[in-house]
Every structure is written in structure tokens, then in C-alpha cells.
Length: 294
Image: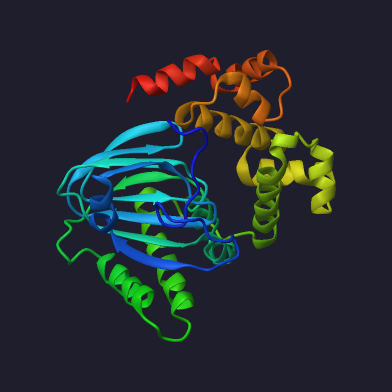
């Protein structure tokens, strides 16, 4: 087992700079056959992936959970989602990979539900037969044309088409919800807050320092989090710490003291108490439970 979780562009390839735009489409079999139909745990630092499984079945690991999937289904993998796959020989379908930042910029203008959807990994069964008549298939074919083409602004066109595809996925995942218009200013603020958390959660910044970096008061940040996310800023920070701890417990060979140190805790016992309070299990219990499902 790896000591660290690999960060790739496409699986097995060196990560790209976070600012670089990307639009790519390949089929599951293109890369899966090279790796004996097993994609080991990894993440993409700045890339979102949409996997449309049209044939076959398998198992996917998403962060701290494992689940079976069966065709037809859609799997959404936002940036920094640790994921892995095992699947049958007949499994196939397109995998779309794109830079997440420009997609989020568009979603902030269009819909809060769309933006929220793009930030959570999910497996969604498809209600359609994968025979070429499903409503999302023309969109995927157009995305493929842009990804493989050399026309001017093909990446921009592909991103616009991908937004339309993500709207369809959001409707499948939230069929009874009425779409809420995005509060662009607040969404941008919370996006910046999450980026700061990603950069500094291991340093255990106090809430006042986050607010100062955002140019607002702690009270304003607290109000934005509670009204938009339904939780306090401290809860958002703690969730990020716990998610990273769960990733390392599940997918690395680091011992608990090493994980505690990596996450900025000088005292492994204090880290263990914090983790148990947040996750409901001791770190050792979480690791054993996760690996027991392998």
C-alpha cells in the first residue's frame, strides 16, 4: 500500500498545474485494459470527471465508502475525490475529464443546486437504456467532438456542453427539487473559504484568520455558512480535517501517529479523541472497518 495518495491528471499521468484548462474524453476500456480493470486509489487535484457506465458492473471506492455499480449509471467525481475502481471485463463507457474551476465559475451564476452537485461524489443509476436514444447521449457525442477537435475555443465549447450534461445529472439526482437561483456573491465567498481551508487546515488557522483573509468579519462568514450550507464555519473546517484523516486511514500505510502529525496534531491521543468525536469511531476502528469491506 502506498505511503501517500497519488495525484494524477489522467490516471497514471503526472498532475497538471491547477490553472491549466483540460477537456478530455476516453472510454473505460482504453485505460482499464492497461491496468487489468483495476484503477487504484488516487485523486485529481483540479479536475472533475463524469463516468457514464453503459455496460458491465463493478465496485467503486469514493472517499471513505465502497459501493457496487451496475450499468447503466453515472459516476460523478469532483476534484480531490479519492477514488478507485474494480470492474468486469465487459464494463465500458465514456469518461469525461475537465478542469473544475471554469465549470464552477459558470455554475455559480446559474444554480446553487448545480454548484452543490459538482462538489460531491455520487453514483446515480440511469433511468434510460444505454442504446443511443438516451437524452444525454447527444450531449456526450458533442463533448467528444470538441475534446477531439482542433477548432478554435473547443475547450470552452466542451465546458459549456458539459454544464448542460451536469444539469441533466443534477435533475436525476434531485428530481423533486425546484432549482434555486445561485447567490453568486455568497457562492464565490464560500468557494474562496473552501480553497483557504484546503490550503491551511493542517495549520489549524483560527476562524478569525480565515475571515481576515476573506476580508469579512467572523460573524459574516458564520452567517453565510449557516444560511447556504446549514452548518457553522468550524464544522466545515472540521469536516475537511476528518475527510483527510479518513483518506489516509483508508488508502495509505501511514500509522496513526504519522497521520496525526501530518494533520498538524502534536499529540496523537488528542487527534484520536477529535476523530472519534467527529466520525463516531476511533481511527484504528475506522481503518479496520474500511479495510474489512475490501
